[in-house]
Figure 1 (cartoon, helix red, strand yellow):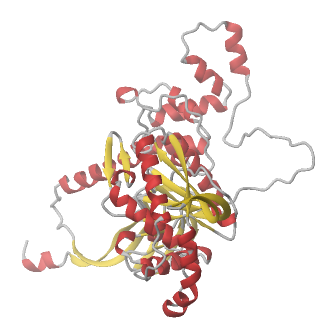
Figure 2: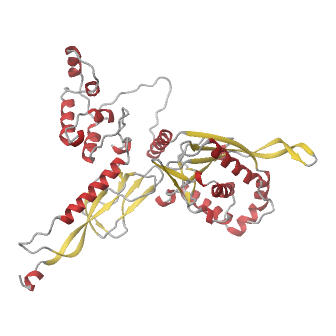
Figure 3: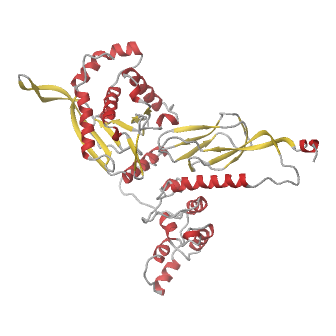
Length: 474
């Protein structure tokens, strides 16, 4: 083939670019699609918003990674999509060389690409381990039977989600694939039999039990009404009640909290601190601070400053657990629980809090709190936290038992500051004085942090606050 004929095959073609669900933080495994701003056939520019997504922490926009035409949307609104999954395809103009007739490119590159994609999907799926609700979709409620150790392909999971097949059913379907895996044929056959009334949820569970069924029992099972994905048990409520549907964020928060309780054995320690010096210092400098720095000085940056100092002394509370490996975080990123006007809660993160002075902490706290309340937080603002503080005293609570913000291992709560008469030790003897007192509590993961470390760390934070220098500069 001469040079001219080879040049004939060089032309402008449309290249396909995959738009994937972006990584949104260490503990975030999936996100919910809220809204598509673009639709198939629409032109998109580089970095132009294509869709809005949401996690249990924050809503975010996903920009286009290429300029071109949106050719295909792979997921619908309200679908829960694992991180790293291709969610749309964009056609872009690109100059490429096509293969001359009579020649075929070696399939190795394509084969390696397929293997890489399969490994990515397998990693996302296996990371759910016991397959929580999110692995099947927003309306799926699994009923696990405790096994949870079988591998299911994404195709099988999608069919199970769309047909309303529970986790207990899926785990009890006999698999004809390699190592007993459930194949597409197995799940479709099961769904078909269930629709026709041959199978029911009860029959699948019973079929796994080492008991002999009588003909009468089998007849009852066979005649049971088929269950569809739309079937649900209606609950009636007596008395004068109002039923309010949870909003999306409240549902995600609820799931996150329940998952945390199932993941970590929680232990909570309590301590009381005399924060009189801290309160009096803040009252003395707050007007001058706001005038000089253009930002208010609240108690939150003062609490965070004390927590950071103690984390440096006890780094084991600033870690996470990966199987049987303890991952100690060198960065100190403090999450601060913030209440939203809707009543929901979000946890923006102060990155590298140990590298900020009090002025820097105060400005960062105020900025994140304002952005949270006005809906301006970005996905990165809630990612990467290593330790969390929540101020339950904001609404008058004296103390609380907070739930750990996974995958962290500890969360500290500060209660309301109250004036109380307390015994004060002086060189002249004991006396009773009016002091500003506050309770602190910390919940921690007992798999890593035992009572000794948890209580010692919490006491150290209380001592930092009690020994606050009332003559310091800010």
